[in-house]
Image (cartoon, rainbow, N blue to C red; front, top):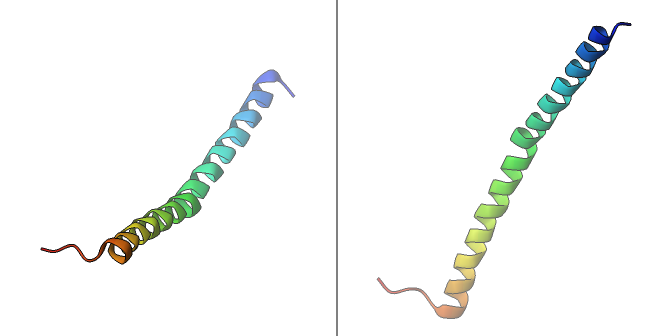
Length: 57
């Protein structure tokens, strides 16, 4: 194997790892973080209303 072939093979592996990481971020991480953010916001609103009463208009 020549040095160019080795370099090409490493680039392919690197691209595959990057695409796999991007897929994980898009498919798993962003949805989970958004669910936690929305749930946390709902919890904060619920706690404010539970202990502080409903805000008057």
